[in-house]
Length: 305
Image (cartoon, rainbow, N blue to C red; front, side, top):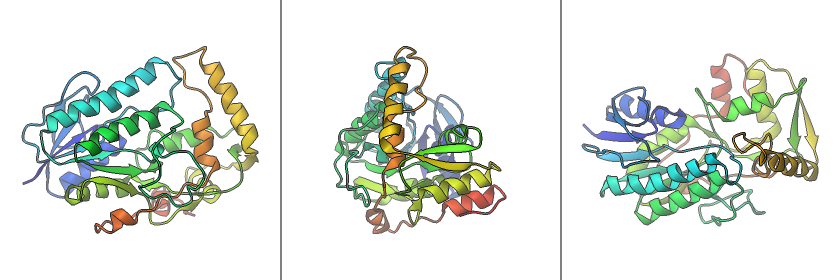
């Protein structure tokens, strides 16, 4: 029986990977601060020490500090300690075992020409600490010969970040969006979990992971709001106005370093520009995305897009 160590198995992505691994017949080690949904718990604080990976045949590294923190804040320091220093500790502990490292499409340069991003798109100029620390961490992983997966906007059952943040932005029945409608890649967490387990047999390197086809932003958001029983009108702000508001929110947040900004340049960028991932490199390894946003909205008991 194969033994798979899943870091961050108590979190959103890690828990789905752990469950998928167990369903596939693997023995699962849930490595992290809290217990995972299956298998044996191996305590690990990524910001402090190296994990015990004894007995593992494969390591899937999902543990990460996420968010959009204020520059120079304690949260930014924690993000570096977990996403960069924690990666270095993990790779040392892996000691030659195959590693699948879950990164993010946030590492890609926020430049024009993101309507079809391949893995060769520049990795630079990230707009927040999350993107920068994921880029630094994945550079260590790539140098160590790991497989690095780059999903975008992961959603699905148990999502504590993306959809809750969207729902919280509805004010008086209105959701404000920056710029006109665009095409966006999203990644169902089930598709990411499938890729994490399949990637153990892929050549080292970076691979984009996303749903079978990109979505029209506005239609996707309407579908999610409807599936959650929220009636809201989508209103569009000029990009320049949205960036101005983000700049003001980020300046204000510097006075309260323990509070995340209400709006950031990163958030505006991610919604205002077409960002579509080319997943052909992963598909050439035999991986296929099997879930879509329609499956997610149907799972909530309402009609999808």
